[in-house]
Length: 213
Image 1 (tube, one colour):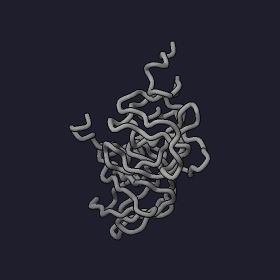
Image 2 (cartoon, helix red, strand yellow; image 1 turned 135 degrees about the horizontal axis):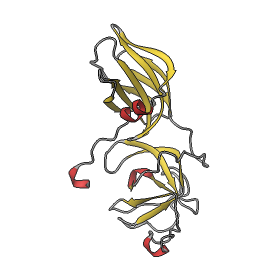
Image 3 (cartoon, one colour; image 1 turned 90 degrees about the vertical axis):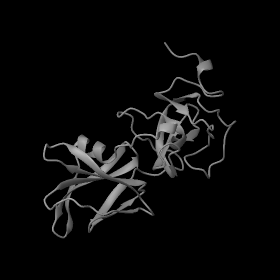
């Protein structure tokens, strides 16, 4: 049974593939996936339920709760967009990004250098995980990118297996690279990180601040 329209944010039709709650300060709805696109309709009030139909990649903004980069823009049923950064509620893992007018492709990694500079394209953030002795993946860094480049310093011993992953947002892993720590830095193993546990560990979202629980 579908929800009655009255439970949704005003002027927004459902149902959706998933739902989210608007930020307490309210949400601007736009015609495309970026702040350069004009607003369309009234500002949505805070704390109302949004039925969401899909998402695409667009302008990177900072998440209102975590203060981390996120380039996902959620699409409403009528084709308008809201920034993921001001909506609490992620799509399920089976929901994939779809192309949209004015959007961009997903983030990608292009190179690893030293210990450790990561280069990529359309790159909001990089997550890094290491394989522990018990064969579980553990996050060691979540680094915002600056002009498609993220730099950090690893203190892992030689021989440690790591996963370097492009994160569209916290908890939203994309393509990754498997590498191993050597005496002189990182050696790119040239294969994609196929292990879902490695990719999700690398881009794991930190806990939300208590004020936003």
